[in-house]
Image (cartoon, rainbow, N blue to C red; front, side, top):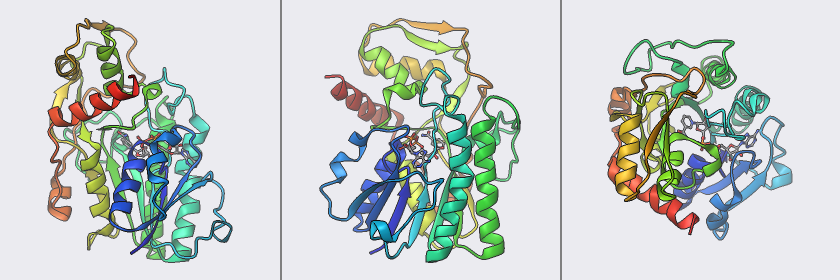
Length: 323
Ligand SMILES: NC(=O)c1ccc[n+]([C@@H]2O[C@H](COP(=O)([O-])OP(=O)(O)OC[C@H]3O[C@@H](n4cnc5c(N)ncnc54)[C@H](O)[C@@H]3O)[C@@H](O)[C@H]2O)c1
């Protein structure tokens, strides 16, 4: 069994990844500052003797001996603010320096650590590396339409430089790295304060308050349930012939934002009214849909959880956390 380090392991996707790794019998070192997450995400994992939580900022070197870490076989680098909603105190707009540093300096620290331990390395990048795409859906070969100075650049460009660092270590130092470009993912352990679209809609619908759509609601999103995203990330790390690969993981099922609001209203039996606000997020992409042909071919992966089943699980999570 392996010794696996997960940065951002207390976060939304990270906590599901830690659970999955533990289920497979690995030892998991969860590295997190709880900057944008809550310890409640990992509390259920703490009874497992193979789970170790280390409060550490990854932009600083990790002192492995201090934490009794002697071997590392794989590093998943997920640490980063991720919410694009500029109304959220946890968004990358609200945490610009933290976002830039964790994806650049932090990535470099972790690549050095991987090199020292000859560990496999996975960098969690994002569909936002494609910016406001001119190609639709986005293949991994598409180079993107990104502003280097716009409000989203603190996230998009930091992720792009994180990719560059990762590719450099693979190419010039022969490190066993890969990059996952994650598209919108949803599921339990998302935080209300993140104010990501799906969470806002669910919380508003459960409270029978107005469901607010920013813009005209015609912009499209493709949402992947977190168990599917984690499966894709696991395969990309551990399947053969993945060294040096860049792979999209996300859903190819595209819906308009208005459709998501309507489905959630129906599934929650809500009496909420759907309203439209002019307050469109900054540089909000109009279309976003993953081309997952490469993941299908290389990893034999595609999402399995239907939108209805996935939404019912996250609705139940928020129902219970508000009970
Ligand atoms: N959720 C999505 O839809 C999505 C989409 C694309 C990419 N991603 C990427 O996936 C990763 C995880 O996203 P998430 O949605 O789980 O976000 P999240 O905010 O729930 O989790 C990120 C975690 O990183 C931690 N963190 C941040 N800076 C840190 C630092 N310097 N040192 C240690 N820990 C730090 C936070 O405390 C948090 O627990 C991120 O890299 C994000 O960019 C997510």
